[in-house]
Length: 117
Image 1 (spheres, rainbow, N blue to C red):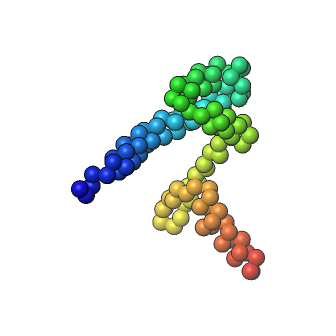
Image 2 (cartoon, rainbow, N blue to C red; image 1 turned 135 degrees about the vertical axis):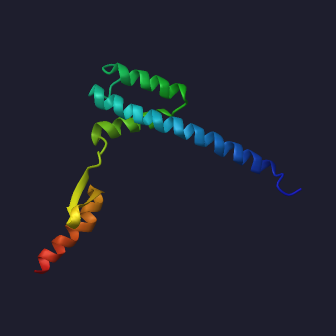
């Protein structure tokens, strides 16, 4: 009876359930980031929006350490907002590139070229 493995059926159901839960939890983590950023506080007593989001996280069975890590991450370093640069090249070609790629493709080679000169 090929293809009738009980474990395979459980595995497919679990994968689908985990995928749905992962989407919900990642949305809640983003809401935690926003609540901490806008409320300027990582303490639920001082930030009512954060308290509401934490209650939603607990209702969705998010582990307490995950909630704490998300809040600490936002307080300590914050989210690094990506910076995009618009580079103007010949023939009016505009290239939009993130900061990390700008460093890799333009700034590092330019520094090497200037150091060699």
